Length: 171
Image (tube, rainbow, N blue to C red):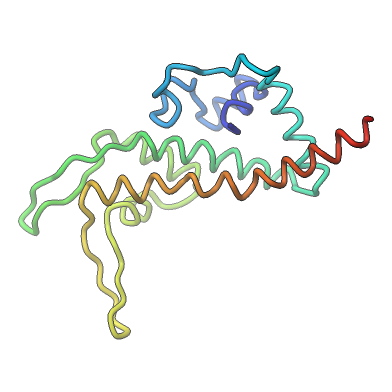
C-alpha cells in the first residue's frame, strides 16, 4: 500500500521527479479499478504521513526513505514491461514491447538499462564452476518480475511495530 500513500502525500514536483503516475497507469495497481480505500477509516494521506514519521522514529534516513520511494516506483514500472518474441539468427529472444518502462525502472533502480534487461531476459547457471547464460521464455520473465511482493513483508512489520508504539504514547 506504500504506493497509494506516496501518491497521497507527495506534491506534484516530487511525483514528477520520481516519474510517479496515477495508479491507473500501472498494471500492478489498475486491475481492480479501485484507487483509494474508502473503508474502515483508512486515509492514504494520514497513513503516508504516519509512515514518514515512523521511518524517522526508527532511524531511517531521508536518503533511505527516498530509496524506498524509488524502489516502489521501479517495481511498478517493472510490472508494465511487456515482452514480445523477437526472432533472430540465434533463436527467439524476448524484447520489451515499450522500452520506456524498462528505461524508467532502470533509472529509478539506478542501474544500467542493458544490465536490467539482461537480468530480466537471461538466466545465469553455474555448472562445475563454469558460468552459462541462457535466454528466458516470456513466462519465466513474468515470474521473475512478479517476485516484487517479497519486498513488502520486509518493511510492513517495522511500520506496524512503530505505529503500535506511537498509539501507546498517545494514550
